[in-house]
View (tube, rainbow, N blue to C red):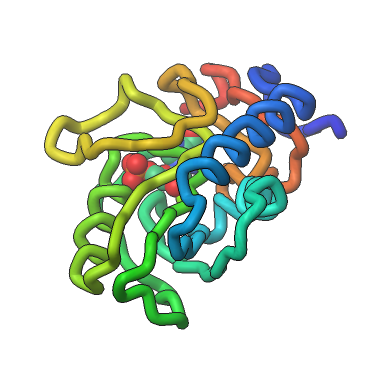
Amino acid sequence: MEIPDLSYEIILNEDQIKERIIALGRQITRDYEGKDPVAIGVLKGSLPFFADLIRNIHLPLFTDFISVSSYKGNMKSSGGVKIINDISIPVKNKDILIIEDIIDTGATSKFMFNHFNNLKPHSFEICTLLNKQHARIPEYDININYIGFEVPDRFLIGYGLDYQEKYRNLPYIAAVKREAEA
Ligand code: IMP
Ligand code: MG
């Protein structure tokens, strides 16, 4: 699919994403054997990743979603994270695995950590498809156990990531070219 109204460059193609997700699924399957895992997808960005990843986790798995807002649809992170819709199943004594599209400043993941630790899970880990380590704000820099790819600090779209709520349906991940970022 071509994007007519944006200048972009593909940085991860469908095959690369697929292959990495199989490996992540294998690792998670091994690590969570005998545990009580709950995969919690962070909407809306994690949707394609969540769908592909859970089918590569070969364990009985609870699934749920949380919907948060942080980016306000432009290219700058706001820092203020707000819950739009919370999870609907109990997670006390369960093994929470948060599924994220991308970690940027870390504000969202730090917020998740605080929010879910209050619910007294047995364990809490985060799995993100993409990590922008160079964009991390030190106070938000919590440990991330599962990372699909390290990516440069550029604005990315596709495979769940949006620009003003569009392009989440692209099957690849692309960086928007600098001149379009203004
Ligand atoms: P953080 O709270 O700053 O770590 O930002 C996390 C959220 O910001 C992600 O879940 C995305 O929704 C959004 N985000 C961060 N970087 C990008 C990007 O390059 N493209 C689109 N959305 C992004
Ligand atoms: Mg997101």
